[in-house]
Amino acid sequence: MKLKVISLIAILFVLFQGCSVLKNSNLEMVQLTEDFIEGDIFAESIDFYERSLIDNPNDADASYKMGFALLNTKGREKESIQYFKKAKELSNTKKARGKYIESSFQLARAYKAAYLFDDALAELSNLKAYVEKDELLSTIVDREIMKCESGKRLFKNKINFTITNLGDSINSKYQDHSPVISADESLLIFTSRRPNGWTEEIDEDGNYNEDIFYCEKKEDGTWSKPKSIGLNINTKKHEASIGLSIDGQQLFIYKDDDYGSIYTSFYEKGEWSKPQKLGPNINTSERETHASLSADGKLLYFTSDRPGGFGGLDIYVSEKLKNGVWGPARNLGNAINTKYNEEGPFIHPDGKTLYFSSKGHENLGGYDIFKSTKTEFGTWTKAENIGYPINTIGNDVFYVPTADGQRAYYSSARSKDSKDNDLYLITLDSVKRSDITVMIGKVFAKCSAEIPNASITIKDTETQESYNVKPNHKNKRFIFIAKWGKTYKIAVKVNGEYVFTDKLTIPVDNAPKMMKYKTIRLDPDSNCE
Image (cartoon, rainbow, N blue to C red; front, side, top):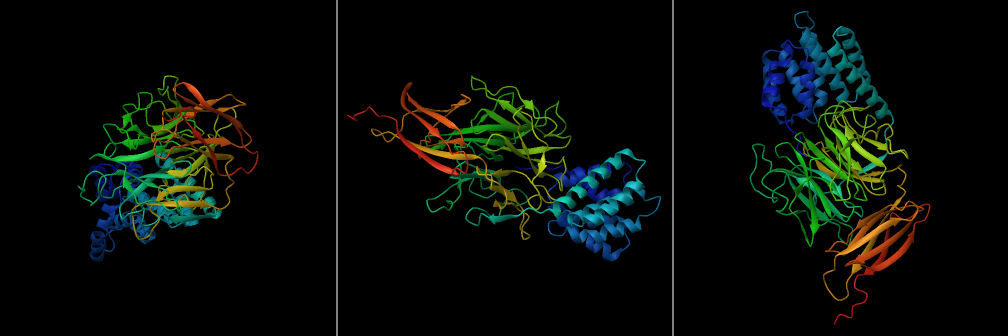
């Protein structure tokens, strides 16, 4: 999803006015700018300040700005350390107190960017003593200390994983991000700034508008070549894929309209429908950015910065009412939400594990990825950082685990050769499998190439909870999630009449990740005359 860029006035305020402004809130403005600005303007300024420092090597302001530009240029963060050191040294006077504070703060952040956490903590400790009488600055420094302490702990306890770039057949030289997948991994949908989406027009940075593309899994296990999802969805504006139902037939889309809103589209008879904006319980006059649908289709988890939350973007949940409308939204509470932004919620097909990104909690970088588990009482456990090196000192968002929980699709600018995001598949070496199985059934109609509209009900025989699924008209498959040790009743109706009923029991332990269910005939009594 396209992050909104802070105004040019604010950028220039920080970059060219530097730290000589009078307000203590300048430290806060620096943080805001780094969080939201894209890096090109910094990269372009490096040559300018490099030349300036040749002529004036003891210019504290130019040293600071050079360091700031390097810190915000991918692959050159560590180079900023020497310039912040120089700026701090040259600003150690009463008159230049503001510049000294900012140079020290940014030096600590540069150490952190280089994963030199002890150096960062030492710098911040000295800075904390220097600004201890200023409540605002002390709060900002304390927050950075917490990040460094978290980072040191996470860095020490690295998780084992294998990360694989999805390759040139899927990734492009443009931004590719926000992957979503069906539970059986037969469909991958993502957002890209490549051509061939809707328009061939490019912006001043040489980028095409964000459009949505898809790939299908071929019989040999490889992905098909990406295709535009179609003109019903892609427009001359920006669209981003944010959520997908487990069967791959309902897509949630972010559109950067007047406020930033969530839309949905359905795959029907071989094409995606025109997106419809979700109702007022989901979309407000504030910003809604991301959504994730539960496996049974009854709960929608989404982000909003509406009033009444904990601050910034919070994660909410809405339950679908009997009339099909999404009900009132409920904030997930302070186990999940903080006074900072939360983003990119993903509710796992197990229905109890929520993955999301946050700038709060105990994090290392900007956005880190966390997970929380819903208890039997409906509350959420304390958010847990999923660890380094999946989480980095940068912004890590839009993490989509597979149904087995042992892999995840993810977008990141991990390549040192490019600032643009690619799509990756992460394999987690030590993660226990989820206790669910993806069931894949199929329907057919002997007397017609087109299958009739069928209602397939999946009922848990213990809890009596049920939900409906529908077959895909293109591949005639239907998908549902079965929990280990459970027994389900499957009932199929066509035109209001039952044509099939069955019971299915899943093994208690180590059931297959995916199981093929029966092929169901939808016109069993027809003689095809």
